[in-house]
Length: 80
Image (tube, rainbow, N blue to C red; front, top):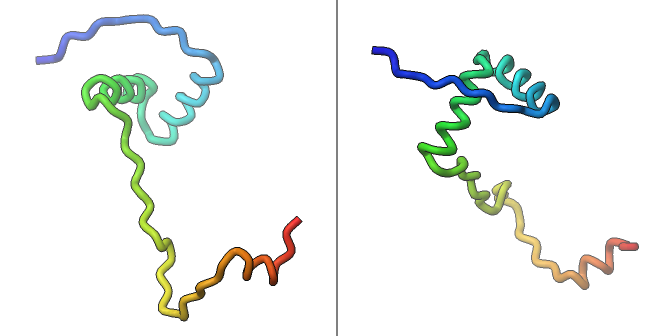
């Protein structure tokens, strides 16, 4: 059985609509699907997707560790 739908009108600024249309096309979805997805995420999930925390160090190295103070760095590099 098809879920009952209610038709509504929403005024979307032209610049935002163009971005919405581009995003829908890039994802191979309709504008309606993208809008409904946004409503579901906002109402049902109740939160934005969490960004992933960055774990340091970003680049692991097996090389020698360098332990410098700011003063030692300033001796070798000119700062304005």
